[in-house]
Amino acid sequence: MPRALVTGAAGFLGSHLCTHLLNEGWEVVGMDNFITGDRRNLTELEKDPGFSFVHHDVTQFISFPGELDGIFHFASPASPIDYLQIPIQTMKVGALGTHNCLGLALSKNARFILASTSECYGDPLVHPQPESYYGNVNPVGPRGCYDEAKRFAEALTMSYHRHHGVETRIVRIFNTYGPRMRLDDGRVLPAFIGQALRGQPLSVFGDGSQTRSFCYVDDLVNGIYQLFQSEEVFPTNIGNPREMSILEFAEKVQEAVGSSMPITHLPLPEDDPKVRQPDITKAKSLLAWTPKVELEEGIQKCLDYFKGRVAEERQ
Ligand code: NAD
Ligand code: UDP
Image (cartoon, rainbow, N blue to C red):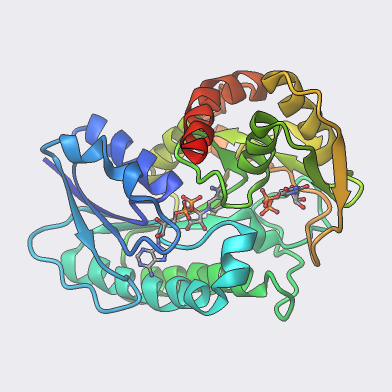
C-alpha cells in the first residue's frame, strides 16, 4: 500500500485530498498545526484505519519514521483575511515549510506535489491565464506575503527537481469551494452563503465587477491526483474556467439560498485582482481532465454543510 504525507490535512483542501487518497488505496498521514484549520475536518478521516494524524508545524524540521511514497504539501493560510492577519507564518510555511517537505521528499525518495495558486499571476494583464504567463504581482503590497511565498515555493520545488532530481509536481489552484470551508474564513463563497443564511446583506467589495471562476472541490481533487500521477514537472492550472463577476456571483448565491436581502458595497481591498480565469488547455490535453460540476449544482451540494455551521453559531 503506498503511503502519503498530506500537510494542511485539517484544512479545507487537505482534508478532501486525504479522503481521496484513502479511497485510492493509500495509507495517509495527515499533518497540521491548526493555524487556519479545523479539527472537525479530521472527524471522518480518523474513523479510517488507513489514516493517522501528526500535530506539527511544518516550518520546523519534520522527523518522519518509515517509508513515504508521496508528499502533498498543502499547508498554508489561503484566504486573504487569514494571510493578512498572519503574514509572517504565511511566508514561513511557503518558504521553510516547503524546504522541509522537499528535504523529506529527497530523503525518502518520495514524489512531491506543491499546492500553488493562481495568485502567482497577481493582478493579471493576460486573460485568461495560461501557465506560460509570468504574472503581475506586487511584492510589497498586502497580498505579497502569500503570492511571493508561493512563487518562492515554486522556484524551490524546481530547484530540488533540477539539482537533486526529486520527482516534483506543481498545481496552480484557482478559486475552489465546497464543504469543510470555515464559515468565517473571509473567502467570498462562505462569506456570501453565511450572510444569506443569517438574513444579512451580502458584502460585495467594490462595484463587484471583478471576476473569479469557481471550481467545486471534487473536480479539483480529481485533477490534482491525476497531475500527481502524471510525469509533468512544470506548473499546471487546475480550476473551472466559468468566469463571472462577483456581483453576478452574489446574485447566484441569493437565488440558491432564497435570500431577498439587499447587496451592500464595501471598499475593494488593495491589489484585489480585477479578473481571474484559468486557461486549462494544458490540463485538458495532458490529463484529459475537465471540471464537471456546474456552479449552481456545487452550491446546492454544500448548502447543507453551511446550514449546519450557521445552526451551530446560534447554539
Ligand atoms: P485552509 O486554510 O483551509 O487549509 C490550510 C491548512 O494548512 C490549515 O489546516 C492550516 O492549519 C494548515 N497550516 C498552515 N500553516 C501550517 C504549518 N506551518 N504547519 C502545519 N500546518 C499548517 O486552506 P485551503 O483552502 O485548504 O488551502 C490549502 C492549500 O491550497 C494552500 O496551500 C493554499 O495556498 C492552496 N490553494 C487553495 C485555494 C482554494 O481556493 N482553496 C486556491 C489556491 C491555492
Ligand atoms: N469578496 C467580496 N465580498 C466578500 C469577500 C470577497 O466581494 O465578503 C470579493 C473579493 O474582493 C474578491 C473576490 O470576492 O474580488 C474573491 O475573494 P476571495 O477572498 O474569495 O478570494 P481571492 O480570489 O481574492 O483570493
